[in-house]
Length: 256
Image (cartoon, rainbow, N blue to C red):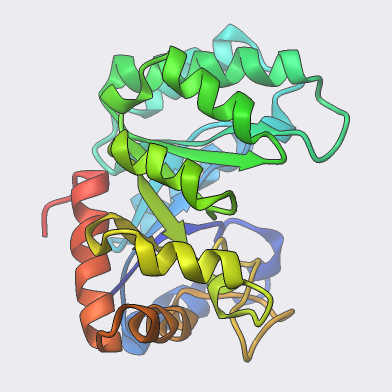
């Protein structure tokens, strides 16, 4: 069964049909998903979804673009939420320099703080990094993130940097982008990376694979991602789905 390691099913894109949509996923080959928080509010929504649906787990954390206004009280909530057994990661956290705000220094502060929470709670992390390759890696090295573990979500940097993350024990999240015609760099990384360090993700409702590019994404569309990986790794799509499910369970420490 498909294990989608990164969704946002709390997003307003699902407001009109969320119940029916989620209940139909199992019939489309989806066994497990992790709904990932991007703010304190969406982290709470992720936790709520994990309590309502057996197949949904949650990650709680604050996306770098949402760090303005964060408080230490928010961090206490994250720690408290992490005690729930279906909260399996701290995320998504990291750095995003695509826009000027929040400031780089503020983003770094809360990235480091949330890495500390992951260490304190014993949970892996889901790392978001956009236009901030070196600073992200520097902080993860300084904070010894190799002792924490987790996934580099929607990996988009070089193979040289991917090797460093793999050596640190991190997994690489691969989604719809690998099916795009202009994704030569990511295809090469998938070819070179060990299969045991790849996991499937949608980032739903975003980043739908071909032939659904531009439409609302969903976990069942990962079949197209699996088939692309299979082609690159000389495997079958079924083998990719099985192996990535095993990887995801190991990464998130969820028993099969």
